[in-house]
Length: 133
Image 1 (cartoon, one colour):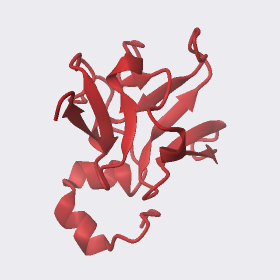
Image 2 (image 1 turned 90 degrees about the horizontal axis):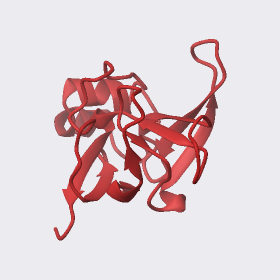
Image 3 (image 1 turned 180 degrees about the vertical axis):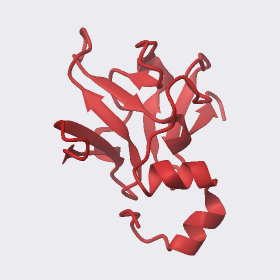
């Protein structure tokens, strides 16, 4: 099992769909261009699907053409954790929810300014809270 802090496997399996469990707990990846938030243009905040921690704002979301929702910055620095990932034999930086440890996706340094970063995040690891809710 993945490193989900303080949440038992049975509770996770009840809360998450099998697809979400595969991404958030087992560190899988949803198929490119399949995520429900890929084309979402509404204003609001993207929160962790496991623990509801605010992660990304619609203000920093953009179409990277990669097939996954992309953000050039996080909403709250303390809510994001990164770790070295060499699971595919290629060095990458994994993005995790700092609160629960859920796998979110990866961050790449191939984005133009303002940050130079592309947070490539699985829709399955997120829930969206529209502005004003």
